Length: 376
Image 1: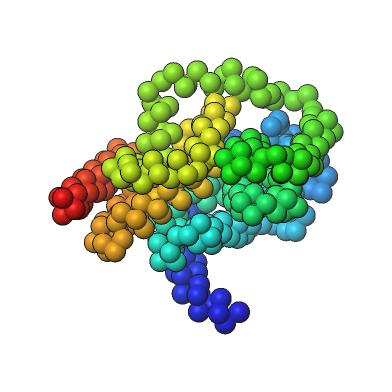
Image 2: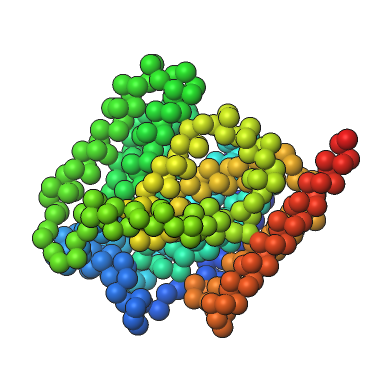
C-alpha cells in the first residue's frame, strides 16, 4: 500500500479533487419542469420507484436498463438522492479508472492525471451525464467498458465476462466490445487460441440481454424497437451537422490535435487497429438514438488514450502548451444549460467554445511548426 501511495497517491488525489470540483460545477438538471420532466430520466425514476419489482410504465428500451435504477431503488428510500450519490460515485470511479488505464498503456503518471482531468471538462462525454443525474447507467456502462478493455488486453476472460454481463444490465453499450475483441485478438495473432474463450465469455451477456427482452417486454405506447429507432434516426448520417457534432463538437476544443500531430495519430491506429474499429462501431451505434455528441461517449477510451499519447510524445514537457489546453478546455465547458452557473445564452456558449477551439488549434499549429523548424 505504501508503495502504491508513493507511486500514484499524489496523482489520484489531484484527479479526485479536480473531478469533485467539476461535479459541483456541472450542477444538476431541474427535472421538475418541462421539458426536462419528460426526458429519459422519467423512465429511470419509474424503474427505481418499482424496484425490486418491475415498472409497468417505463417504456422500451429504457425498461431493459435495470442496473443503475434498480441499485438506486433498492438501496435508497430517497431515490433522487440515490441517483445523485450513485451518479457521483460512478463518475468519480470512471475518471480514476481512466487514469489507471492510461498508466497501464504506458502513459506517464503526470500525463495520465492531466488527461483524466481534461475528460471531466468535456461537456458531452462527461458533463451532460453528471448534470442529468438519472443517467447513472451511462457512467456504469462506461466504467464496465473500461474494465472490459483491460480484461481483454490481459486476456482475463472471467473478468471480461463479468464486465459484459453487468454491462448488459446497464445499457446496450456492451455490444460494441465483442466485435472489437475479435479484431484485437486477430491483430495480436491470438484469435485461434482465444476465440472459444471469447465466445464463452460473451454468452452470459447475450443470455441476459435476450432474457430481459423476453421477460420485460410490454406493449406500451411510445415503445421504440431497434429497427424503428434506426429508421427514424439513421438519416442524420447524411447531414454535415452529424459529422461535425460527432467528431468536432464532441471533442472541442482539442478536436484538431490528432490532425496537427498526425504522425502520432497514424502510429496509434497502426498499432491499435481495433480502436479504429471501436470508434466506427460507436459511430454506427449513434444512428439508433436521437442524441449526437453524447452517444459518442463510449469512444472516450480511444479518444483520450490518443490525446494522452499526443501530450506525452509531442507536447510534454511544454507546460505552457498544456496550460493553454487546460484553460481552453475549461472555457469550452461553460454552458448555457448544463451548469451550476449557466451562461446567459446559447450564443455565448457557441462563441466561447469557438474561441477555445481557435486558441488550442492556433497554439498547437504554432507549437508544431516551431518544433518542425528546430528539427530541420
